[in-house]
Every structure is written in C-alpha cells, then in structure tokens.
Image (cartoon, rainbow, N blue to C red; front, side, top):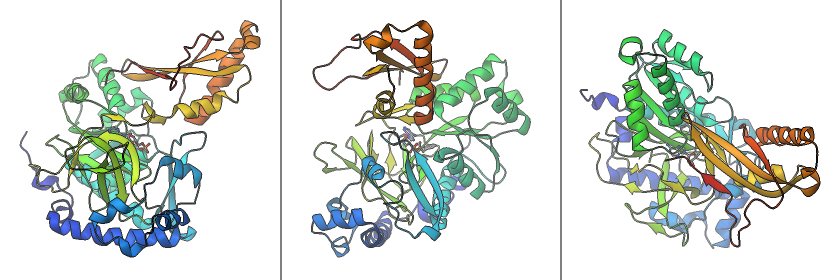
Length: 440
Ligand code: DLL
C-alpha cells in the first residue's frame, strides 16, 4: 500500500514540532498547571508544601521530578470532586473507570478539556487514515467508560461519518459493518479478533463484501501476533491506541502506520518512566512504570500520575515525521489490576463484594482465561462450614447472589464456583489470588 504520510497527520504544527520548541511549550504549560493545582486543589497544595515547594520552584520540565506523585487511591480518597481544579459551572462532563474497591473513580472535564481530548483522538483517527470521507464504527462502550465517547468525538472532529454502535451484539456489528460500508473499526483488540473470526466463520470475504481499511484498537494489552491475526482476518492495518480516564481517555498515545510504538501527545501530557520501587525517573529506553503529568487539563489536571503500566519510551525520530516520543506496547503492570473484556478489575473490588456476602469465607481465587477470543472470569470462593451443609438450592441462591453483586460492582458477568471450606491454597507470604491463563 502506498504510504500517504503527509495526509495522515492531523496537526502538523503540533505533531511535528521541533523538540526544543516543544520543551519550551511544555515548560510554560507545566508552570500554569502547577499554579492551578496549588491554588485550587488542597491535596496538591499540602503535598507541595510538605516538600517545601511553591509553584515558583517549578520552572521547566526538568523540575518535574520534584513534584509529588498522584495515585489511583488519591482519586478514591478525594472522590468525587476533591481533585477538581475548575468551578462547578465549568465542568461539562464526567467520565469514570474502575476504582480499587467498590466505588468508581471519576474525572471532570471543562469544555476546553473535551476539545483537547477530541484533538488528541483526531490525531489517532487521522494516523489510521480517517478523513471526512471515512465511515467509522465505534464499538467501544458508551457511558462512563471513555472509549465510546472518546473515539466518537475524535472521529467527529475529522468530519467522519460515525456509527455509535457501542459494545456487544456481534451479528448486528457485522451487519452494520457490511451494510453501511465501515472503513475504520474502533474496539478492543480481543473483540476485534472475535468479530474477525465470526466474520470468517460466516464465510465472508472482506475484500468482496467489506470496505474496511483500518482498526483503532486499545484499552487492554495485546501482542504483535494478535495484530497480525486481526490484520489477516479483516485485511486491514490494525493500530494501537492508549489512554486512561485519569489523564483524558483514549488518545493519550496512538500508533502511526510505521507500527513501531505509540506517539505520546506531548503537547498535552508529559510522560516519564520511573523505577517503580525507588520512584526515580529513568532515561529514555529504560523499562519502568509510566507516569503522566497533564499540561492542558483544567477540570481535573494530574501531576505525575502513576499509571502502573510498564513500558519504555523511545525518543528516536520516526519515519512518519512526527516528533513526539513513542511508547512501546504495555508489557505488564506493577499492581494486580486485570483487564477483562476491556474492563479494569482489581481483586480488591471483588473482595469488597465477597466480604459482604453471608455464607462465604474471604478466601478466593480468580481464574482468567480466553475462550473463543473472549475473556472469561471465574471466581472460586470458599463457603463457610454452615453454608457448605446447605441444600443445593441454598448453594444456587448463594451463587446467584454473588454473581449479581459482582456484576453491579465490576460491571462484568463472572462464573462463580463455590468450593469447600479450606480448599483454596493458603499462602505464607502475599496471597496469590490470580491465575491468568490468557496467552498474551
Ligand atoms: O481504557 C481508555 C481507552 C479506551 C484506551 C479505548 C484505548 C481505547 P481506563 O478504563 O481508565 O481507560 O483504563 C486505562 O487500560 O492504564 C492500561 O492499563 C490499559 N490500556 C489502555 N489502553 C491500552 C493499550 C481506557 N493500548 C488502563 N494497551 C491503562 C495496553 C492499555 N493497555
């Protein structure tokens, strides 16, 4: 395929900016965001004061290292509005994601935040070949999750015809793809794989019946092998997109056609790689934990947000002409968060449900597998001695109760397996609660 790199850049002035100039811009924006946090968010003011810092101490991006970190638990502790840095009347949107226990974490956006976020996604859509001629099917979930609305806004910004399918209903997704002539599909890579396999099982030859050209896939880790398989199934270019609710949503970084890492939108966020244990910043090329500081956000800016995603940054020039650094695929996490069917799940969320169910003991094991390209979660949980001697219908009732409560907290259906007392292995150190059989 002939590469039309020039036409595949949405905002050349920003995306191909000279790196010295970018550094200046980042420093200027960093000063403004630090000032905003210090004035409006007590948590940040107190943390800076505890380190003996005032906003005047942060002059350039080199001073970033002195700023305090932010953790997901801070969003939980400040839930819902404690980290908002704009007045109520200026917040026009709330999005959310899983917290570490029962409550979600929420992010607030001003109108300008939505505009900037759309800009970031528009760059990703353009890199995938999206234009005002394109038909783009958004199969990420709409709602608090940032995937649906995020891709929708970016695709609308480039003027594409958007089909807001949201997730689920495979037969309908494939029907619309064929009938409406979708060119770009946006969904999780595992769902893309499932859609592609279903398509082939139905005997559809994409070259004859579809108009598909590319896919923008993210929200969960995937591999080069998965990319190849999806590309073969649909005969498209499959590109990665990364993001997280705390920082904006999808579009924090996106892949170009070189398929060699995702360009980080560095005029809106500053990425760092740190050693997760010593918390010291590491040079480009080192593997470590990814940390972001937002530099244009108004609603809920973040200083040095620890993503717990493990990856590397590459600052060498990219053949596409963009100058933004590239982040490698996410290879793991420094915490125990799982991503199941694109949904973030913490074992602590599941535990918070189980401790409130009468008849079960707080001993459990999570077994994750991928069957027919779809993630399956099994929760094995021990019942108490009394519940164990209950009738079959009593056990069924218990299973249903756990299933329903879990669904309402984590938003996913899980298979519940009740097991006899004292059968889940006890560990002497840190409990091993996860068996992940997916081959990533
Ligand atoms: O998953 C935002 C998103 C939506 C990204 C659609 C891409 C496409 P959260 O629900 O807050 O936001 O989850 C963020 O998901 O810290 C990573 O662990 C993981 N993640 C997101 N994108 C990727 C990716 C959205 N491309 C968390 N590869 C992040 C690997 C990803 N992991």
